[in-house]
Image 1 (cartoon, rainbow, N blue to C red):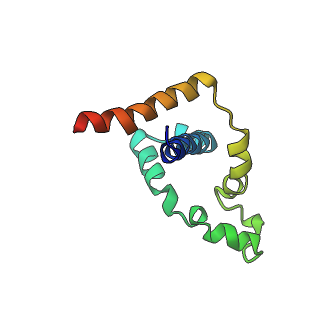
Image 2 (cartoon, rainbow, N blue to C red):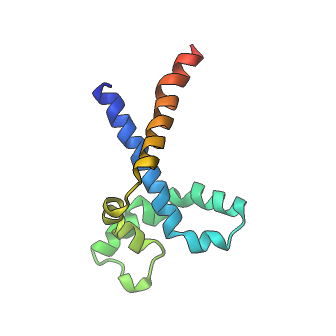
Length: 112
């Protein structure tokens, strides 16, 4: 497998881990929402100022006090650590590899 394909494969796993972390972080909120509301929340999560790093950087620069308890601040602050600590089973990694193989190599071949 070439280097570019390997990098895309690793990116595929990072996206999956990020999705898992978001689901874990907002689990209690999701359990109180209807399915459509969850989809809207997930669609709009990247639009929130915190996730664009504006508010997070202002908190780090002490322009906004942490005591304001901005929703998601802890999640963004601990994201890197959480990613490192989130382990995936070998079986799940194997399934992700198989899914990647299908979407990146087999489907394009079938489309031609």
